[in-house]
Image (cartoon, rainbow over all chains, first blue to last red; front, side, top):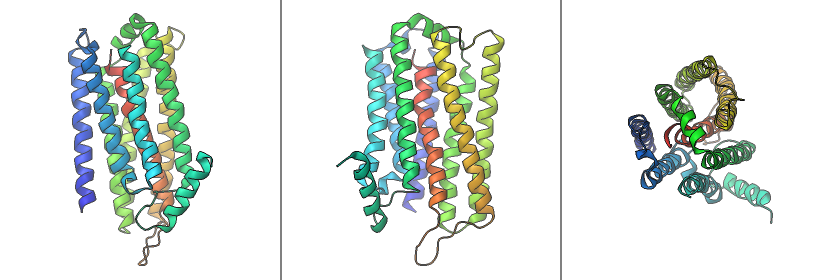
Length: 89
Length: 207
């Protein structure tokens, strides 16, 4: 039962974060507000959170061997961090 | 010890441990890792090219359709959730529910395919193509590469839905499972979703 609740939380979080990101992109698409470093950081932070939910809950890697979970979690953390860093520099 | 042998030995250990189990086939996870690596290189290339030509990229992003991308993102996320529900059902030996959930996931994937096709058609009608500039070259290359993965994922989901329809997946009373193929297909589909989650802000949101 616990995993079903976690799955429902994950899908709600994924949809909510997607809609927020899309709304920000749509609302500020003609302004330079979206180029603000802290906002770019926030967008990539939301990507990391979404990636963690997909990895741990949808792919069920929270119950997988630590190495495999670590590999996938490091991917969803490192890749957005590199992209964020490139945009920041 | 090489990374490959470490990963294999971990998976072998997990096969005997009831607590730590890697869903699906080990080969699929190696395939997923390889695919994710290729996409990571493409994402980084896009971000670097964007930093080198910011004006071209910002102008290119303005031509993309914002509603189409929201529809695509929600379609992929919701189809991924339906695949999760299908895995729950197959673990309860409810093949019919699993098949129905997969068919709904496929319908959402079809929405993605149609919307993406429409988006490409709109851009091509405005004379934007792979040769227009660096932005469109990378945009078409990365999104079409992902599009091909969605098509492959749909074939995989279709085949496991067909097998589920024929009651081909069974979890017996001892807990022994023959659902690893099902789980492997589901994991591949989640990988497609995971890639889109990163691609979505990279190409459409962050300017």
